[in-house]
Length: 309
Image (cartoon, rainbow, N blue to C red; front, side):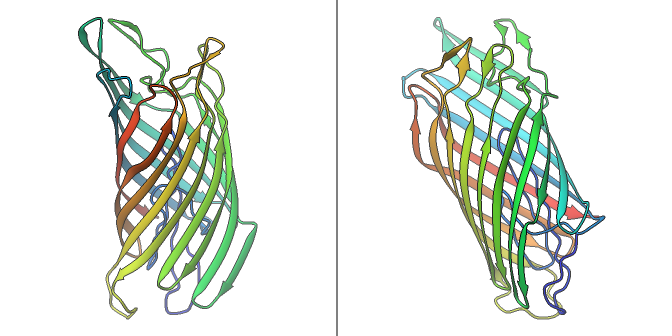
């Protein structure tokens, strides 16, 4: 996708993508950065494709109840985006997940795990406002989509049916939507997003709905001044994710040990060229106000690449 801002730096390529269970939106550019953990409002050009792969590792093991529990999730998230028009873009996201839960039950250490294709996510984004002048742009774009139950949600092991948090898929069709705004200059970019995901019931279980607010600043660290002949650009990225999840429902009753509010701060780096980006960042929880004995998150590490064709 190509977006013209000024004649000397005319090709800017962007895309967005989503991870399970929450969104992971992406962007690619000739001299520009984009958020690592959420959306951008910058466009996908008509008839352009974007591909992104992001690897995500998360761990939770701080159990307020004092029990020995450790939950790890690894995801390889594949994203394909297409520009239908200069304003409308469509995206498909398919994760591969590997989940494990280690805990002590009845005095015996147990490990329950699974791996496989996760739930397919389809969504669209449409630019409703744009203000472009040489050297900067401002964009606003709503997005909406649906997470479809393509992953296995009824896996069992020697202890019986796996918990919903360990299943590769949710078994439910879950709609989501939101609004993202982007302000971009030659030296930096700022993005902000508000979104909501409504989880539905499957197998007598329903994950709590998720609302989130996100913000990102990307600042060009090198080169300090723009000039001809530079092969790539190094950006420093700093993001914040404020995420609230309602309590889960199981067999018609709320789970008192689920849901809550978490604030992540995310330092990261991106190396940007005309056709591809390599990026990495770590989501660090600085505030966790969770319900009951819900597991606290230790970290979420992200590494990936993007390219257009």
